[in-house]
Image (cartoon, rainbow, N blue to C red):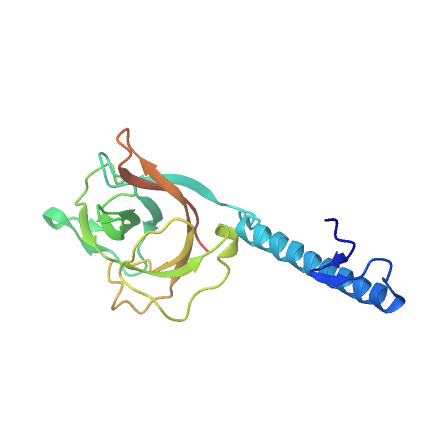
Length: 216
């Protein structure tokens, strides 16, 4: 049997009895559905936008490099020049006025820092060359959209090392001295952004691609 009733939004109305009042109710429900759809589309658009943030522009002087812990480690040189409180006594009693401070990584994917002294500026020439661990501090500023997003020097959170994480920004501070903890000298700063991991042919992580700027 054919049902002559009309169903609208789950409600039954007798055929030919869609009154003005009913039409108004239908219009209200239609408007509510349209509003809900609009809100949902805005939510989806916002979610997509947040998932794909715009990368911050690289500041002037940005250097892009790969560092690794595998064969022939390739650290970042933070400073190479005269020490502010030298010269120091190096190997074989050689007077060493020159300083080199580098940032690298270890097999645990943490930052490592070393400071070297030498009798000449060229550290490939061993003139009393002596290396020490440390010489810097680092602070993880968290997830950022690029090196240009690292804009301030932290007032806390400094440590001798920390984990390297892709997408994070870091600020490093050091002094023109091998005596980082005791030298009464001003800080110098560098900023770093970790772009991606570097893997070998077995897909094992052996390093990281980084962008950095020094001084900052």
